[in-house]
Amino acid sequence: MAVNLWHDKREREMYDNFADLYAIIKATEKLEKAYVRDIISSTEYEPECLKLIAQFKTLASTLKDTVPSVERFVDTYKMDCPAALNRLVVSGVPATIEHRRAAAASATTSAAIVAECVQHFITAMDSLKLNMVAVDQVHPLLADLSSSLNRLSILPPDFEGRAKMKEWIARLSKMGAADELTEQQARQLHFDLESSYNSFMAALPNAGT
Image 1 (cartoon, one colour):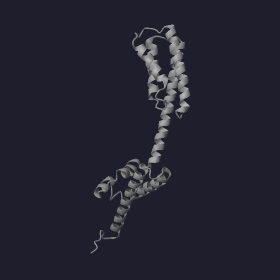
Image 2 (image 1 turned 45 degrees about the vertical axis):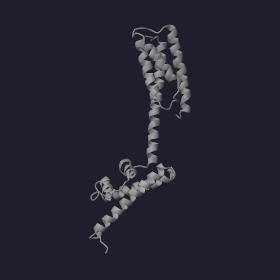
Image 3 (image 1 turned 90 degrees about the vertical axis):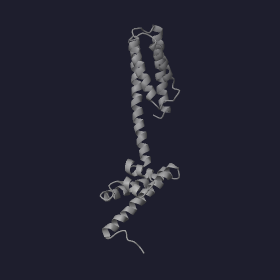
């Protein structure tokens, strides 16, 4: 004997919508897993994911009174779909778009740090030319430069400028604040800054900027 889940047309429509929501969540979970496992390409994944997200948003809006929480809906029907929940509820965009946004943000951040490094290089070299050779004048400039270089992930790990600045900072740390670099030390530091700057600029195209 068949048992009806609904008593009228409105209830039937609600259960049909529940079935559609269930199907969309399940389809999204399968799509996410297929993409992660490299079963489908990003060009196949993205339009399908966009379509499912659009369908989900429309249905979730229709069901907002009967399904106020999609997470509770998933729990109620014992659906094990963490990837679908992340994509549909948390992110709201395909993983491919997320990756492009992250790459663009990273490129913007890198560009800002590159500009920072250039500024620190030039400031340090100009200061030496102006005979600002006291430890308490030179040390902060090299510390700022070293900090910026360490934050720039697009440089090769063995970039010589990092090591040179670290050596100079260690040397200056052993001196008193009022001590001054000798003429020979100042010339050597300027030479190291200039060669590191040139290497830095040369490394940028290879780093993909």
